[in-house]
Image (cartoon, rainbow, N blue to C red; front, side, top):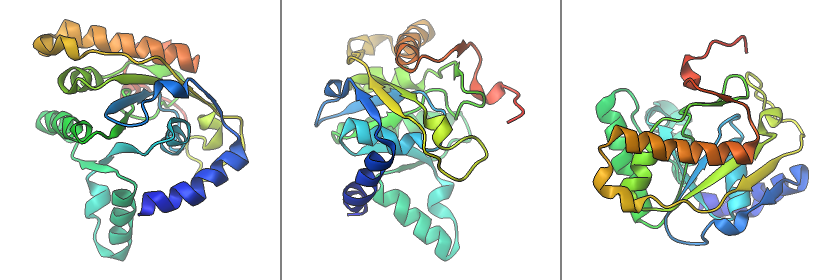
Length: 223
């Protein structure tokens, strides 16, 4: 209900204000499971991807967003549930494994799952090394992967700034990638990294970012 309300109110407002450029949207299936793997440069990314995909997109969200006590916590939890967000704990290896299981379950329900394989927002605007969870999820679920390149969302909401600003925004969706045929090799570290790099290269081609071969969480920045 909440998502439908926002679809009828917030989505048209964002389109009217930002007039985002969208290319390759035909690559996104209108129904059925799909993984939308995107670069991550702004909090605003989660709002713009569904605009281009033209369907509801679920995302993993920190479990704390659903368990904060008090009225504010209940309101926040209701908002995230209404948006189709999926609560996950991300504190240890077992939690990471459960995230994959949850993702497979979401895709098994025929939903679109948006993920940011960098694991966090880019601290410097460059594209950073992808974590292999996206490969494991794609291989185990058999769901198609659509790479997504976001351009300009960092300027909409710069790091450390809670306000949104008007700036040109573009969303580029690439051709579908299929990895379900590699199910027997899911435990191979080499296969997981190769699949991850294939996805990363596609995202980079779409976003036009410079690439830094290190994880975003390990980069020091003044921002």
